[in-house]
Image (cartoon, rainbow, N blue to C red; front, side):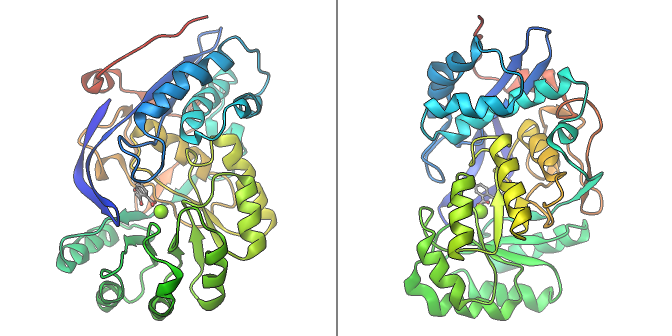
Length: 359
Ligand code: OSB
Ligand code: MG
């Protein structure tokens, strides 16, 4: 499936105008259906996985490994998938679909079976790099007027200190954070130290995506908390990053960590260690967004996540109702499973290719 973005999204790597999606529907023997969405992109700019590698993994390894298995709890799926290395976004797509079916089988909401405790969640917005600062200030103004609980902006070398200074001139008090998507190195330490003057909630992933050592050095020099995104693929990565002092906050993305079971484990570990977490976004369509919403109902998702409403991204979403943000909050649905119906008409309209696997 392919959807066009209403607003092209620019990071330190480049601009996205649309997004290809791999969507999966699973069915248990009773006919309970579960839906999953891969968060990989068409090209490996942000992660080594792509829509095509996900399809390969899912078709040739992951589906065959679970299709004939009897599992009592979705948590076992994670174990079964251990026979394939990494490919976390592919694993997550299948695993989170099974979680949806598992919840529907019990006639409970996904949030409830995950152990969620909230009725509503606070959300923020992630604003991409704009062609000029006037555009950026206008986008922030719109988000703030709509009640967004915090604003995240993307930064990169040459588009950082001055941009943040300008933002603070107009919005001295908003909850503000910056995401560098790995655009800096320790050579930039003097520049990164200047970020302390902007009272940011955090700086997200300033250094390399495969690093936790240099982040520990940097965190020692900064007052602003570091939040890790790209560096965290598992509970083990989380434990090591926290132990080393590489960050004070963790961004949990279900796809990046291989599914909801691992996401929940990371959440529980961070709760124990007093490390706040928040739910990251990957420009999801409705299914991925619904999974993010359910996960955010867990208690240690203290900070607002990157979960804006469907209409912030897409002309038409594939779920009904679409995700709506009111005064910076999303109400967790009570309906069984992900709690949103699939809008089959829209899904069909944007579907490019389809395949069925049976046992
Ligand atoms: O780094 O959090 C990121 C989008 C694509 C890839 C990486 C990231 C992002 C975002 C957007 O920041 C979050 C969203 O609104 O879905
Ligand atoms: Mg990020």
